Length: 238
Length: 217
Image (cartoon, rainbow over all chains, first blue to last red; front, side):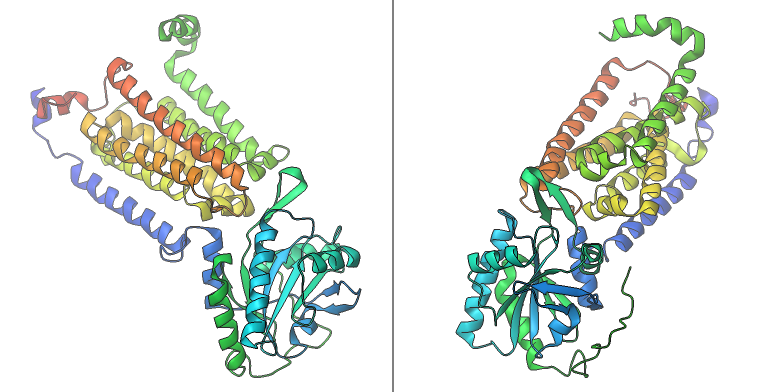
């Protein structure tokens, strides 16, 4: 036993130094991966990232309940309105009902505040296999959409689905009873096709406020009213 | 129970030795965990948070721990006095992979998944090296922090109606929450049992610490 007592501190300073290095390394890794300790879920990371650097929505064809086809940027740029966008599938009986209710309230608010010229609502279906014009029409009626105010479109080609979801950062996972679960949120998109803010479903009032502010200051985000009506879009694949 | 197991495995133990068994277990668990990240089994961890966080991740930690038991030198490691470095490293890595955004990333990004495989295996090895050199007080400090942390996270996953991982359904998250609580409880109990009925193997550096701090184990 005695020889051991001759070096009671053996290895201890080195161990302490190494421990500190490990601790700070770990904290730095976590800090880096969580946007400085502010975002611990993918959803908050997505919202933070978009708020910092708005992304361009992809360019591909969408179809509405009347069967009219146009590209997504064309639709967004049609009359200079700022859009509040959400993602749905018409068979949905759970979360999309909540989303639908939020959008119904937003629709009522827009009418009440007389914002029809400034803010529009757009629901995009991510289930092109099921959601073709007849299904869209039925859903629009069920939700009591006012077509001028609240538009509903689906993808023209099923192959665009992945691109749509990736560009907005939506993850769709299968749920029981053939349903889907997905991160539902309110997306503010400028007429220029820029996704500028993402807010939670419970933030309808704030979302409308922000969209209205954005519409009132059209020069701020994008000086040109129609930056990308041309056929060849830049690739926005991740 | 333990006696019976010990009796049944005795011949094997004599034939290949304690370290040999640990090595075999390390290889088996590593293969199982790796297989879960590759086709055809990958859909399991992509679709179920339980398979990801309660099967694959613990398998990786277990594999690392077994590998350390099998192949680490028996002497006390200098850079790991009182097991501090080992515990600290394990704690950091495990905390990292409990963050929902990073669990999502491991599902979506193959490079993140590879990092997860390597780092959690390393966490297991570090945990084992820390544990075997740590006096009871140090064990209490780290286990007393880590186990409640895991249980708290589990209760949070199970009780919130927010979907924390975009890759998993709420129901999957709920099950994982309760599973984490159970796992935390099991780890706490396992530690208590080891303290009381432990293997009786001398802890690395124990003799010296005993002389220095007679109140230790």
